[in-house]
Image (cartoon, rainbow, N blue to C red; front, top):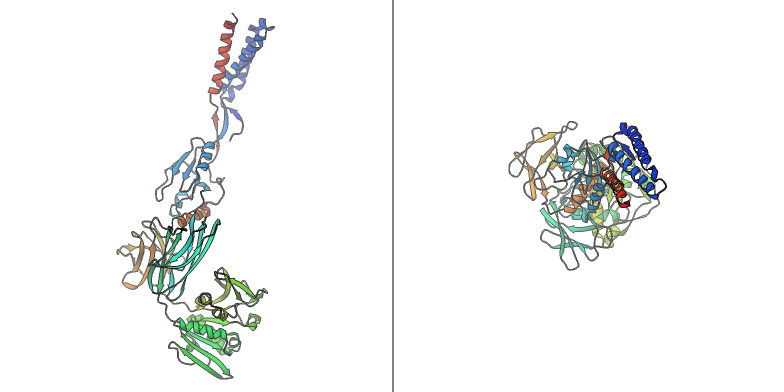
Length: 584
């Protein structure tokens, strides 16, 4: 692109014009005798063009061109060749370098305004492009699995729920979930679309560390892709649950059966008449409770209480329940009825709005679920509980404990209709979010979502123990960096050397350890590219131009090639020399 012509030797322009006019005048005077002949005018034009060409050679006309100094192109995986050709046609002789992960970019020494083509650089290499002006151009569409989501740690007996997104699926192909032995557990056919969301489920049959697999097969049964799904199935500690009702209901009966089948200790109290109760004990539960005290509630992980019993609680019982939540982490779940949604803010920590919706759709295949015509009010304290991206319940933290409720009703009908899996999924999600959390001496969190061999795996540790030392499987020490704002929070980096399950251990402690799965270079390729693309868009934005402040982008004068002036000069002078000889 240019902005018109400029003469480099601008100071010689007028002298050159005057000399040129004088030379042309002398030529006209010399040839004036031939003014009545046609060849006079031809020679006049030739002389003029020769003088103009000679003048241009002296003053050197140039154009403003976009400078390639300070600019460069970084090519990453998935760049479009047509995009590269387009840039090179605009910026002549622009520097170009291909990116190799983990290696320093030499182009950064000479350029600070860079076109980044393709899927971008790895997140651990983004530091190299700091303080540079980047125009991120993007790359080709990522095909295949672009997201896989599942719980990495599942209590034994619960259902594994897998959600995955596939880009550019093909009709006739299948997504199949298989266990670590290769046995198929669930499958979904692909449909012709730009993108398809896949949901697969499976029952866990044993505890331990397993590697399930998500397969894509074509209509001939050939495996197109095989993605490992590392799962830790843990033996969950049985919970102590107290259920309190003013009268027996089907909802309470089936929920009680569900909890006892899971192996939890359940003590159910049902009011028969005023002051008289029926007590039921399951899985080792004992000791009847008539009135709530801090002492008898602190032993329980969860209190399930219907609305009638909740509103009938006396002042002392309410105070005891509140103290048990705040001090000991008791979880309280209120079974709803119509009167719950009319309670004032003084009696209930969360509130509702009437939404007039009595059914929602959950699960695959989609099933209608009955609900009360209310929804939870949006509040800073109120935390949503979601199932299939639909809010089904909510809770409010009460220091260490929680209190919550749901808007669903008649959920026992799902069991009667043969939808035990949906019933189990919903109640597991609701109660898991409200139940008292297990206190851990050390809490682990993986920052790097897809660990790979010889690449940095970042993790966080929360512990109140001073002087905690961590080691790898090989016994190598891992240094930790303490968070300046949260003293109990530490951050570490490990470079795993083998694929599969790896372990980080606490020195002199065989119990506190953290297991994570390391993928090899051929696994999760499309997901890694999709995540890299998102990280680069997040870092540099989607605009395909330079930051005007940070960029050193400028224009410079580029002289027009002298060949365009020497050629007409030689042709015109040649004609003026040859013309008299042709005439003779």
